[in-house]
Image (tube, rainbow, N blue to C red; front, side):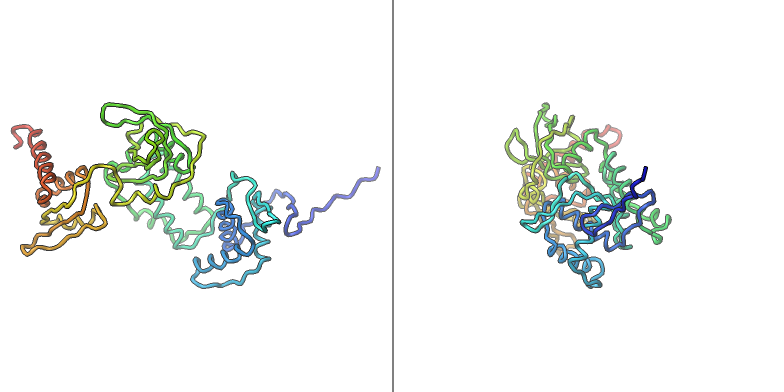
Length: 360
């Protein structure tokens, strides 16, 4: 019986499939990886780019990477990159002939390819990873560290010798990385734009169950918080993650609200009642610490004739400014408003009253 000859698989350059081999695929050139990463990013954002738009993105990439356009691209370059994404990385990219745009058929696809980074980009990545080790609690800390290690595997960071990495030290303030059993759930819900059902301790003797959409994740006063749309109050609310006793990620998704995101500023982080027209006399090292604490975007520090300084803050919560004044050990004296002076006096007296008699 005559056997049929083996069929050859021919790669067309656009839609042909690449025969599977047991050998490891060679890594594409660095600039091609960056180009394909930009395509993948646009596809994941539902931007539906045209080939012409991708060509313009390529020129932008060159400017970002080397400050000058070193290569002249054509539409054929775009087609080759799309072909490589489809055949080498199993990208479910489709072409809309009517609108002449590309789109993803499956948004669960990930571009799993080690990035080819410049030395400055690798250094920034390592610095960010080290800071994350001191700021994020587990298990997010470990996930970030493993992700950085995985990206560096695909690069050649000879300049990042062990001594250099170990010489970079970040000392976060006490309490920044306090462990929370629900942090990873909240983090994932924020990352994936998913609704949360939480049990929240309002610190007034009650626990409340709420459904919230976490639009913003931020660190403030050594505590991780979320600014979320609360469906119980039908309005945005801020929640301290360490006061969330239980958290469950729900199937419902939400679209990030730019207004809620932009509302989290140094002047409007927490919803405490604020003291207005705050004035504090500073001496010693207090001016230096005042400059390092941005309590309001329009705060000012002016020198007085006697060598002291006048610290003026348009508005600030008492919960923020009173502990700061007390921490300055007499080098920050409140002048206005009277409510601030009274609150600091009560705080200092409470500290003295709590001390054993033989220590005063």
